Every structure is written in structure tokens, then in C-alpha cells.
Length: 145
Image (cartoon, rainbow, N blue to C red; front, top):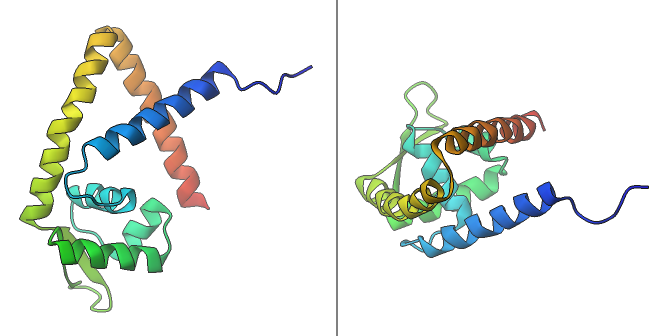
């Protein structure tokens, strides 16, 4: 008979998620929302259109539009007409947006340092591989929806 008690994997994933949320709240110098942080993180890899951002984050066009408007007002992003399709806006980080992400990165280094203190090099490599495989699966499921 299967128990209704959550598994240790379930517990570990939920508590890890809670810790990451707490960490994210702690290192948020611009008081931006999680969705806005995710958008900025995507834009760090290069310019993108709102539809591409929405697809990657599984967010509606209206949510993307509202968040982009706020980020633009804060000076973290700029938008220009796409050279191939003038109906689309190419969205990219401004220097202020890059600086703000840089501050967050510096503070996230503490998390990396904690992990290095807890895990051996082999464990770090194993965690990285396992996390990346789960990340890829979760992203693919979002895209497929």
C-alpha cells in the first residue's frame, strides 16, 4: 500500500525551492518581481522579442507586456522596432539593467560558495548534471504546452 506521506525527494525539492525563493528575495536590489527578474535573465543572453520571452517563460502576452512596460519605466530595458518585422519590438538590456543583474550575481556568489563548502567537486559536478537535466525537462514541458 502506497503511503500518502511525501517522499524525501519531494521534500528536498520543495525545501530547496523555498530556500531559492528566500535567497531571491534577499538579493533583489531593484525590488523587481520574480517575473521581471526572469525576463531580465533571458535578455542577458541577447535581445529577444516579447513573443519569444513569453514562450520561454510560459507567460501570456498581456503579462509580458505589463512587465516589459515596468522594466522599461525603471530603465532596465529598451525596446526598438524589429528590423525584420516592424510589428515586433526587439527588447534588450540597458546598462542599468546589466548593472542591476551584476549586483544580484555578486550576491548569488554566496550561494555558490555555500554549495562548494557542502559538496565535494564530484558532488558539485553530479548536482550540476542532475539539475541541468531536470531544468531541460521542465523547460521542454512548458514549451510543449
